[in-house]
Length: 121
Image (cartoon, rainbow, N blue to C red; front, top):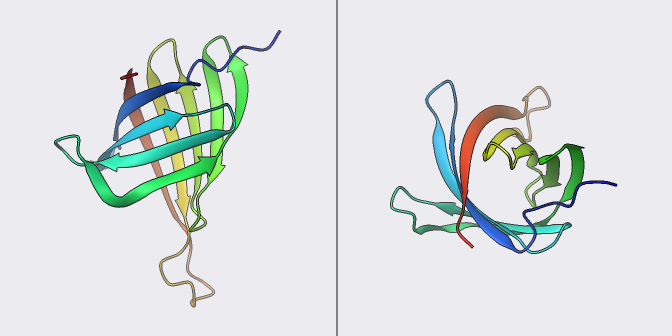
């Protein structure tokens, strides 16, 4: 029997950081196993204007309390999460469209972050 995705109906705050020193904070609100709303948060935990979107997600169980969660954003950004509800961690890989879309040789931006999450509701 496949694992039930434990995030449904809950909200989480996730603090992400990268090996290169980048960091960001986000709130994830899982309304169903196919829909999630994310909101970017500033250092004080306040929503950042224009940093929210509701996305269609795909959830695949990997092992007990470990899930692959993927989505594509309105601007073409793709996000891949490895969400571990046993360790309360997320590894994310993000590919954003090239900043200069007119340049055929421009490569998309790729970044990888590790995060810790805590359930807030």
